[in-house]
Image (cartoon, rainbow, N blue to C red; front, top):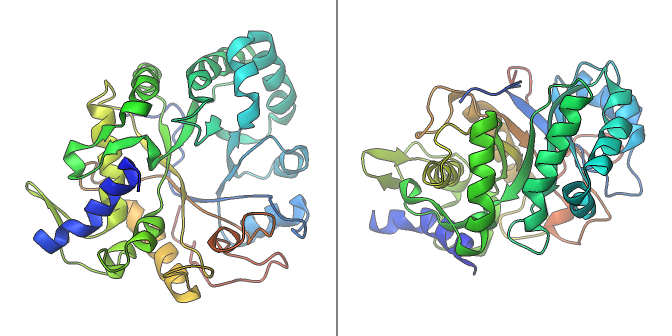
Length: 338
């Protein structure tokens, strides 16, 4: 178990021992993943979002069919880059300008909430390219006449300490990349995107981490951190990231939860009922923020819209709210999520 996983494990285990965004778009969205060979056409997918009152989505790369379907839709969109494009985006300002002219400028009627430069590449061999890519994209976006915050999406692998949440800190392997990124986001008043999965912490240690704590299904304080109590693992993880940013020159940087979800099949604790409970509870819970940042809605994106059959077998293929035929795996109520 790596350091971040151990810290999140401790957030679950310890019960045994007792800023202003440039264009903040708050509420709930759903990730639109496309790793399937049987998924509906993009226009049908966007119609499904609108019919279910899902007002925000995230796409992982600038898929032309999806972008065309999003024109004039009124949906808020997080637009991702390919991870493999980060090195060019970082080293060549003209490439970043071309990227914006190709993937943003023709879609002026799309409401882009953020551009995320890379997904879950810190720590790793691409980590050094993230901040230069963010800066080049930000310059290119502004030069093209747009006002779209540019950030990156990270996993909890960036954490070295996550328990207790108030002592959250970036890992040694991530801190040299995260600290300048956080400082940059602080200066720009842009958010950091974070992928938060209580499911994986629970599934690795189901005997030690209470299922109700992972599912938002208890009102009991399971983790006590000074004067603050935590009734769910999601808040504890998010607040440990807030603490890590505060300790790295980013006291005002906001978080956007760019992914969270629970699988309906394929692994320990993965069931339709648990997935239904978790995702419906997320939709209701994030309206109130976290103990460290209370009374401010935490913008959050469920993962994912569809079960995707080209992802690895097991739980990875079973995070969808919908099957490829657009029938529900289970119901999530988005009617009051915006």
